[in-house]
Image (tube, rainbow, N blue to C red; front, side, top):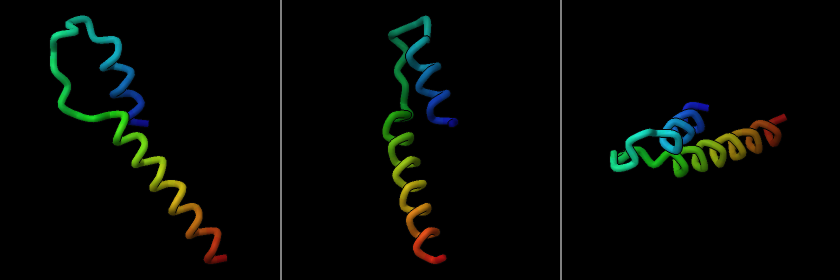
Length: 46
């Protein structure tokens, strides 16, 4: 959720020349991948 908010704020910034240093999309994909892996492990432990 935090990375989605960061990406939303980055897209709506008023000064387009400001450089962002956090790769929000990459963080969002990695968080989703981690969630899927953890859910898979949790289901296999039952």
